[in-house]
Image (tube, rainbow, N blue to C red; front, top):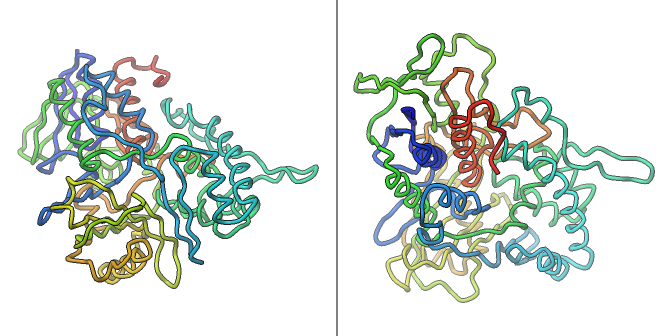
Length: 476
């Protein structure tokens, strides 16, 4: 079997490494920082602990499959995994609140009727029927198969046209879906929040972004005990069990090519490491900008899906016990100049010093440009979060603000990638097979895109492409 070098130790890169090691390859991971996980980090202070990346897991089947394929212990024996119910509480600008149950369509429609008025649930249910059609059309080509050599065939909008009498009106943008089909401004805000959480503004996102609420409301939201960082710990340990070698605090400075093919990497120590295949798990734009690869002036490659969005995260250490009836996740919609924020309040003893304190994380999606006073912006975020956390201002012990600059320091780029969406080639991530033979892309910046589940899928795709070669038709 071959020698594999993996650049970076993010979730997608480690998922690739574990699968390749099981296939008999000798795998070495080089990571420029002192730890693994990439965007899935952890911040600790005074007995409080916080995830610095995603706080919830969707499509856990991706990681169940990884653990089944790479060892004897299933995922649930390696991490504590529980459904979040309600999946989310939404607080709208007019003060209306609704709790959406986890993975229950009937429960969701009933909750919307009760909170927003009769007929709201029916409109949302009709929308989900069309969203499912888009999901069925894109699931294989966008999630389970390698990106086609000509991705233009994915540019056809998969969201079905809305019938209007004898006419069928094509729907191109997610905002049009809301205006034409949902009509209620609160339902429109609900729809937009799913896309905006991934960095897609509803005004410009393709209608196919309808698959995002469908996916979450169908397959559910899950919490990992100890935080999502515990999932990174488990994947790292699985890699170690499969004898993947990790070299930390060592940056790769070059992908070495010979006769037009990647044959190894150069390290910051001036050492060259030979390889039969190289897998890059770092952001593809960073790989390009830092010129780790000689693209030879080729125009066949471009950093797809440049969203121009990042995250601001505020970690709040609070005095006082978490009250009864708290939703794990609350989305507070924008109002009075304050941004839409997601407030995470996990009931997890591992994240707080004792039962008389609480660790709360507040996040907002922001443009990477222009830069602004992030501390001032964090203040607006905390004001918004006060609608989800009673007495927040009087409970705050301290806050820690993570800005797009921190995202860049952790991952190599300030942008946070979104999942692949049909209907717009510009929103497709880079293909897993790079323009340079022998070099592959894994992780959130490559097909099928950003998010924990999608990064894990990229690992399955890259491993399949290396192990099975041109015959690989996709994961099952």
